[in-house]
Length: 225
Image (cartoon, rainbow, N blue to C red; front, side, top):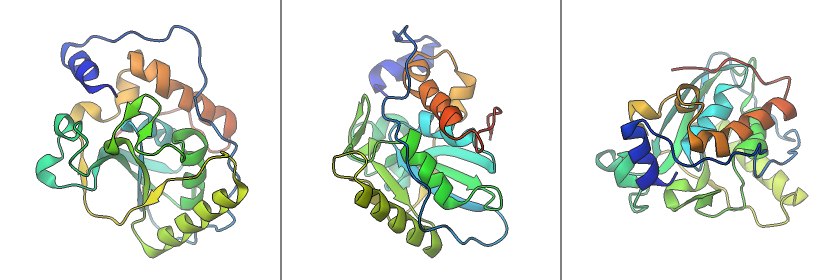
């Protein structure tokens, strides 16, 4: 997100200039099913993903069956700097991230990974995604248990072998440090602001691609917090 423009737009309830032509997600990829499937126990699980602007990643995961909560927030830095306007400088160590709660009886962690790389984030973009540049927009997986760590490593290795993007994959697997929920107005942002210029240009196409590419996993309703 271009912070000086978008922060002002949110504060004053106005939009920035939007692309008027229909667009598909800029970096969709037909990712394969994971060779290493997650073996998760009963009950809800939680995972953290960083993939650029959290508005779009939240929107993607919020349209998946089996996902019961998606919280936008900040991972990798300290609590005192987990503030939207502060992390915009790119020096706090935070990444814009989402914390996803899901039911593995409906959707497994490896399936979340497949969706993430198919329509959520381009794994070849180092410290940026689309129009957003800086370390706060890095793409990273943050496993919260040993099983997620095993599956994440396995899927990244699989994608590297397949060389789908024809460029090196730079997605990091980061150890969990702390997750700080973002300000209230960031939560459910795409659902609350469907006509926002940024959502229309960059994030609505991700959701359309999700529906087209994963019809069995897609749900029409948006999981609200």
